[in-house]
Length: 333
Image (cartoon, rainbow, N blue to C red; front, side, top):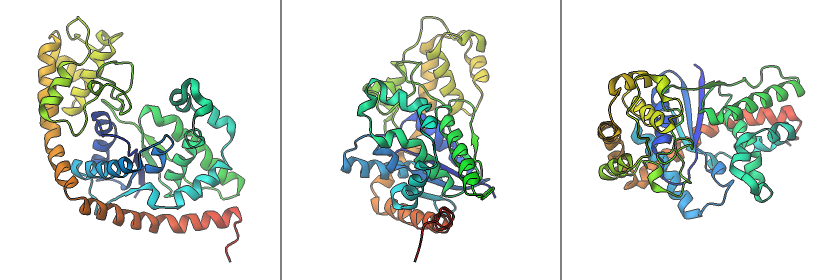
């Protein structure tokens, strides 16, 4: 069976974009693949994190996975820092990857902005750690959003160069991206040109997975739109990023296509559409939120899932990292 590795950062509250773009897809994929789902707390500290908040958010993300339907008995849920081989392989890949490759990574430029001289080395080398996350388990497939596709291409380049440099053809597979349909990239409710993000200073820009029904409805009512009614077809979305975003969210939550959502609401005003979207969002998220609250009241259970997952992840990773060290020429006496 093919193997999937996918990760999500443990920073701040999970939001609708995380759920639609990642976690919900994991639930569907787990029926056909062997899966490792990782809370990437090592990636999180590429920018400073409050230690207590990092621990709490790591548990919250794990709880969200479980509440959404990821089967922690059949598959592996763990946090990255509990498997030391991630860091070991990342260093080896720091010595395989080329500076020119990293210099082309657009996400670093976006995140560092004009203050790139003050950015952490970890933020710059983030893609090498991501490659290590994937290749440590010889994953064959990786669900990614469009914004992470470049990083996965780098992981493939690193795998190919390692295989070539050390004369171990096909030691690392070249992992294939898995990019899904509607709402793979959920945008801000306040600006349809920006990705929905935990770091946005406005709470109204995102729907948190911990928001109650009234808050969800309020945020959708206040979501930015334009004065025109909803379009008759997809061509009518050109130059209307907020309309495209809300219709994409509706399509994803209703398990339909954006074209089907457009056909359903063609010509309607945003007031009516937003009420339908709010009702749908509440109906879909409420059971998950209830289970998340139950799990966060039972931290011992969440910790037990992460501990078990880490043990199982280490059982896969340790023989592979041992073989990698032997291949590189590290002496083990």
